[in-house]
Length: 193
Image (tube, rainbow, N blue to C red; front, side):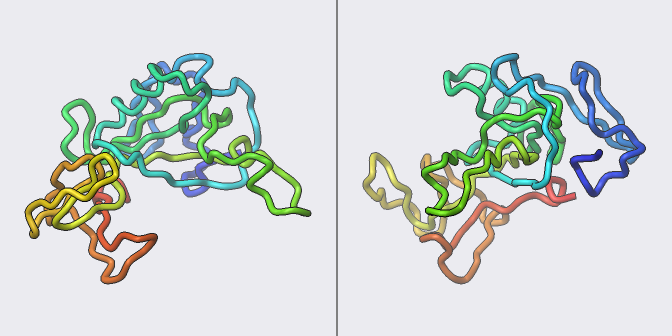
């Protein structure tokens, strides 16, 4: 019963006591940054799907978890967060485990109203493994948006939604618009590996 699928089940990837690092047998050890009790559902469920999300934020996976621990959103989060480059407290590609992946937290924002008539509602959050990847997501070139208005900026620079500059070498140019954006923050090689 290995929810990661691509990892052999005999190397002990799934870890219920996350207060100690776990070695998965590939010269890699998960770092544990526990999500507080009450921030995830303390209920084990079987997993049938994997969802990848991006944080729309900085590269620190530990800071993502610490932010979830401080928010008042309730059981919202993922069991795993993958750090990006440039974080002072996490290595690029470092995998942070927040809670036992057999358990769950809301991560899709879906409710029965999102299912078309005739399609029965199913809580996909419960039956999926969610992985958060530290990444800014969509970017703009030459401007950023502040309080709903475009702010003109350096025409050759790329900006995240907060107006921060993203280095050109960290930008993926799709060559066409996808959901209104042509430019996206690249995942690092370490995040993909």
